Amino acid sequence: MVHIPQKSVHSLSPESRQTELGLLDAEIGTLRADNKSLRAINRILEREKKDLEAEVETLRGEMTKPQ
Image (cartoon, rainbow, N blue to C red; front, side, top):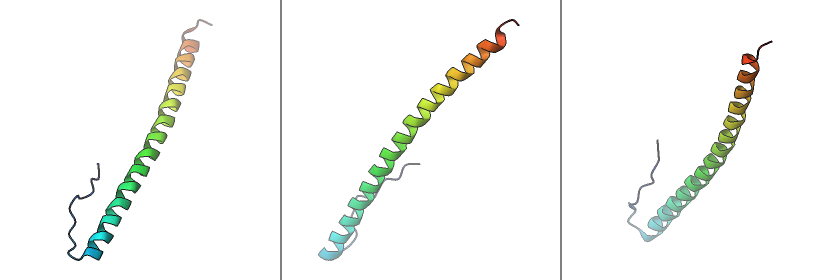
């Protein structure tokens, strides 16, 4: 599920609006950092998957060799 921060500011006073905008910017920054981390984890998992698939193919080849 993707979280999309709200685009509207609900505060009426200028100070509160500024604070709310700051919080929204911080939330966006956090989401970008999370996204970057998840992409890095995904790259690692994809690499490990390739290694495991290669190992499975090697083991399959060893199993089909006549003894």
